[in-house]
Image (cartoon, rainbow, N blue to C red; front, side):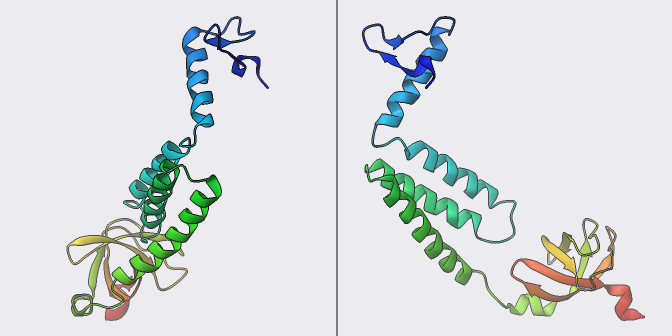
Length: 177
């Protein structure tokens, strides 16, 4: 155990803490006191939840946001002073429920998606990889249906199918030839 984490209540600092600045001692003291309280996990759960919800903006599926929302629920359980195992079980349970619920929010088919099949690549789509395409006025994740084919940026494409939030495309010139 580091010597600067041993509290000395008479001095308001730690024992044998020579050379450690007062601000650093104070930070360690606050952390030590926070971990003793029953609400010590509130802030970590909130931070985890907000980070995951923010990550949802950059990820194609509705998973990170659901898990982040469940982390906020676990933070509320921590605020109520429930034990860490209850918080963890609540987080896992709510994550599963939120993921199942949000899967139902994503339509599996759409009349509007069926009307238009033309798209244009915004970024290059490497062979076997993913890229971005412009489709119906917004950008989508996309991958080529032909595994070894690379698609260049700005190329006209044809949408073959949709898997979740990812469009499966082929170059339009392949259909014309």
